Image 1: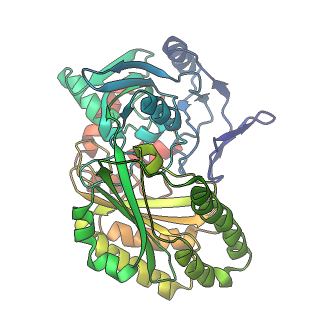
Image 2: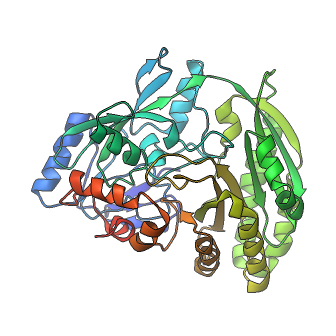
Image 3: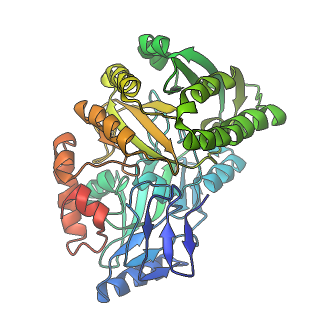
Length: 442
């Protein structure tokens, strides 16, 4: 599931298959020093620099025709501090490896997204998040950062540093790759705990009517709505005293691999070939997954395999605007004649203090729309985006959107703070690419 590069013509492609790039050269540094040297060399040669993780962004945030830095040798845990309850990890470490290593040490992140294929720096730099009433995105759990800046120097920052370091810390946790190349991240961790997951179907209208209650009564609440139906599948994750009762191997394979990946993939192939069948498939899909309850360690509850490839747009709207936004989205799908085979995913996050976090300064709800890879998605995404932006939506930095710097300056109160810091750290725009030019301004 990682990003792919064909050595033959040097083309890099992302996971969704909708972005490609042909870098002038690729570097796979084995140390921070090697990375700093690669950055200085690129500057001397007049080439731009981008680091790329596993290519899970649907935007061209990592694309470059300059120097492409691959961080797969910068992996592993540098340090576990049990007194401070932190772990420092190299930037190229996949979340999956971090989660497994922490579990072995009896530790865990507090919250995480629903896939764990990405590198820690790729996931945090784009604002990857799960769902939580009090606990926020992966980046919100960062306690310290190390990054190589445009002049090849190594900068460390945390909440406890100088005024300049605190300003860098507020911005660089979700830095979009614009301020430097992250080389190591220190996360807050806690002793490993158990979560009980309760998954059950629920009518769409009931979820919307009871949303505030479902949100307030659960530590982690999310749901999937199947367009063309009045059905959702809800998931509530709450801490548990145990005992652990994992999903059985056969049941797990049937629900997570066969239904959620295998049958779903086949259904999408049929839907792509014959769009008229999609509403009927959606009705069957929405009924296929039955209610279940299980208890396990966090990463086994929060994350699940995603083998069916898709393209995605996700916006954060103020939490109080969620119900209206979803009603408008449903009305739009119903009257548009669109055929949407992928469920809409809804999650929440509390307000945080990161400059360009989608939850910066406001309690947020996330609405993610998806289309099966290879299916035309523009009409659906354009119509959805019109609804999201009418509610002052903020798009996920790693997912499809058409917004630009002018729009972001209006919906991020601290946008100017970020761009001013970028002017100081990267005045020559060494880390610039087309995407950053659009979203941050020239």
